[in-house]
Length: 331
Image (cartoon, rainbow, N blue to C red; front, top):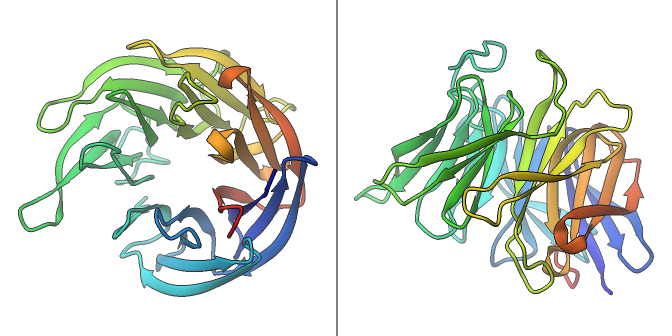
């Protein structure tokens, strides 16, 4: 089996390259590329495999394009541009467009919802809409291109007050949203605009949430497309700041049946503040996760058809990992 280079975004000044060897179950660093303050999100170009983009979370936000060679061991900045805002926390790359979500700071939770607070930007996979979860306003904003070709606000999906929508995922005509502040996940029926969305169900992100108020926060939500190896769809999400000494939980939900949202597995990670999780490898066989506040980085293998995760490789000496991107193994 090949060795997989994985880029690690972080709350440092560097993007670290790790090498995951699935045959020997090892995870080790191979290089580090200094790029600037807090490159917390990273995403690759859909057709140029050695080009990736990151945002620098700083007051004068920047978007950087980087080129990686030699299996990720050689990285360099090839272009940079203003994010036209501050603290770009999410970057999304299309074939000829790069989108950035800049943190601006209204909702019931005044500590986190003083103003609009975009936390992700993502294109819908089948119809041309741009989705922006706004943690500060308790809505997921929807944009379409107007007659001039500019993206224009065209609608929204509302969530519970104080929920704080952070990230979204799509499956089978539905929208799934993780609510950071209330630690819940929701499912909406999602027809294309101008038809309105329809709320279906909301569930806690874990089986036994601690009493409120607490410091737990929902983080990432992923639905890897079904494939030959993993034919049943599952939803995976990460929870942060769990008080358990066994670390944060990655929760797995069954979503195959229409309207379903059933928690089937909770995986204790031993990681603290799991912010980003990303699938990679053949048929998205593996999942990488990191503890921003401790525990390092771990690679898990999907087992039991995707119903569970088994840790197979660990590297502890990574500072403040926040996100990941799997490079092609032949780069």
